[in-house]
Amino acid sequence: MRTDTAALQDTSAAGSDRVPRERENRAEELTFRFEGFTYHCRVVHCADPRTEPMVLLGGSSQNRHAWLRHEKWLVPFGTMITVDLPGYGAADFLPARYGMDFLAAAVRQLLIELGLPTVNLIGSCFGGAIALRFAQHYPAHLARLGFVGMTKTIPEDYAAAVPRWTGMLERGDRSGIATELVERFMSPASIGRVRKHQVVSRLLYGQFMGQSEEDLRKSVEHNARLMSHEWYRAEPVPALPSLVFTGEYDSLCTPAMGREVAALVPGARFTTVKEADHLVPVERMAEFSDLVTRFCTDQPITGLPYCNPVETPGAAAPQAPQQAAGRTAVPEPALR
Image (tube, rainbow, N blue to C red; front, side, top):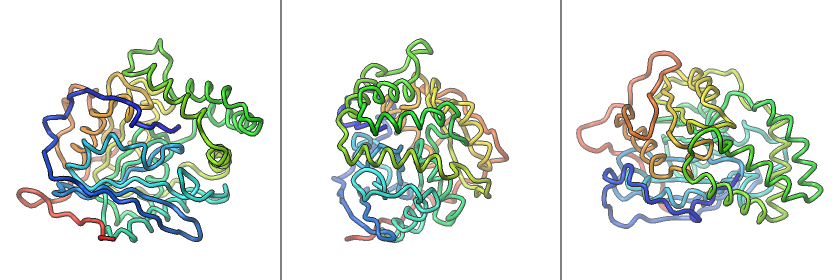
């Protein structure tokens, strides 16, 4: 579901001492076409990057502007790119016959259009499935790979509910499906303390109720896409620095499911963020951003006060990319 972070305030100080003061960063909104479908991206250029550009692939209803409030934490460390892939956000409608292979190829074309040889790719929920397929097909483009709230398989109860949700959408029962989806994406209140639980629940409900007819049409097609294509395919996954994490109370893509994903990726590390669930990027924005930037700049992620112990469910971890003394010279998106 969409999580418009501009509607939230976050006063957490986690990681704030790590955010360097930089000169103003330049933002661009760009439009491209891939195999006949128009899509859009937002690029916020870092004036003095410490790592390769960070490409964030959000959930099925997270558009490229859902990460605006994260920019103040992420962009000081590297250029930040968010995207409305075909079928999502403001991009063209994409028929359900186009699956993960197509979307991964669209991400590759985006990197080519921007002139980026390698990036840090971070995929959240549905975006994680695209990121994994991208890693399997185009590993040479990756410096690091991250997953947030990711699973190896679509949960059975979620898959079973999709036909009912599709019917509710087609009947125009927005209130009913909004209530069900909030309950599905958010953890039960009794499971443990989750930051901003009530605020985020109200935000999700309100944003779903406010969707346009075109948004709903895309949601129906997204559900059809989920049910007609492989979420995960047993193909080789490259050995490169990788991190899988979610909220400790994630009831949609549980920590156990995240460990299964980490076990697929050679050397991937796994952790959970305290006092958060599936919506950890929204509930704990500063901590989410701090963890992502630490990972992308090869800084320690063990012993962080907001995380549970780090695990390595898979094989031995690969070495981080070699860096020269001081800051690493990294490519910038081509000027347009």
